[in-house]
Amino acid sequence: MSNENPNNTPQWRSKLDELELLPGAPFKGDAAWDKLYGRLAGNKKSKKIFWYWMAAACLLAGLIVTFLNQRKTISQPEHHETAIKQPKKTDILVVRTNKYENRIESIQDKIIRRSDKPVQRNRRILLTQVSAKVQSNESIIDDPEQHLIAKPLQIVRNSTAAVVLPKKKLNVVHINELGDPVVESSDVTRIEDIHSFKLRFGNGEVFSNPPVVSKPPGIIILKTKTASN
Amino acid sequence: MNTSELVKEARHGSTAAQKCLFDLFGEKMLLVCQRYVKNPEDAEELLLDGFYKFFTKISSFTYHGDAALYGWLKKIMINECLMFLRSKNVFTIVTEATAEEIPLQEDALDNLSAEEIFKLIIQLPVGYRTVFNLYAIEGMNHGEIAEALNISEGTSRSQYSKAKVLLQKLLLQNDVEYVKRKSK
Image 1 (cartoon, rainbow over the protein chains, first blue to last red):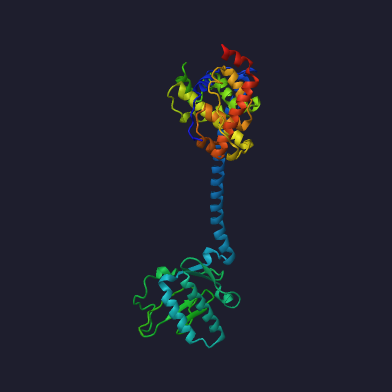
Image 2 (image 1 turned 90 degrees about the vertical axis):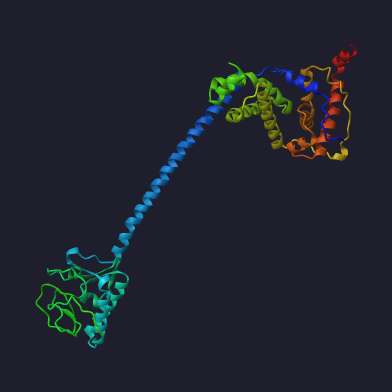
């Protein structure tokens, strides 16, 4: 048995190719064309529909993405609002802690040394928190006395520490306005060898080392001198 | 408008050109389909499928004359028919052992008209008919047929042999006219 096609009947093929008309029932070409045309038109329509769907899908995807982005941006501040009791801007003394981190730490050390009394212990807690927040860049001190006992200090993101003063209207001095650390000034540094620190709140309470007599309420001076020891 | 222009127009989606091409080749292609699929409804459906493919893929066709176009269309139709037959799984399995080579009188069909040959072929069972069509008329070898129909080469050979036997029987049955012609 050979696998080759002898094809010894080419006349069959030519004869069959010559056959033009169907034997038997005639071919209904128009009816067949109508069916075919219907299919071809359907194909064109379906192509159009496909592109409409694609456009709609793209639009929907874009909307979803923008919606999700918006939700993200909205939800982030909401999240912090729950954690932080936002004080009024006017009531906040904002202290840039980046520059004054060392000072606060030194203050803390000094207060700890003298923290035999319970009140000072509380203050020590406060200052520990302050210094902790200094590392996380921003903190708010909202009515310190109240927070010392009731709530821990809460955190703000950026590199600021904020102190909320009592509602009594006071002059507020931004620590940034005080300038670079310690230029020798007779107003601030009273004794050459002693490092002094004064943190005065509106209610007249003063944190200091060594403790100083409180001045009448007014301008708050927060100034330190770098220790030479 | 000649065929090349019709093809060009059809490529651009002209319905009129498509209709002209369908009118030109439709009936011939239906004959091709009916040689493979006996049922006229199925054959017409396959014809429409084939033309649908032709019109949707006409952009990939480069016109090299009417014969090339006819050949391309015929190939599409045959493929459609084979796919249809494969999907129906109509090929009877005949082992190689049972197949035997039976010589067909070469001149037996030569004296018949195209219409008579067509009628004889469509009387064959589907498996025999398909293999006979592919081997004797389309000129494919058994390897190609086996691949196209997803059967073994032996099966293809046996189907062809049996088709020839059956054709001879059919010729003998309808042989009055044939004998008359031969005696002339």
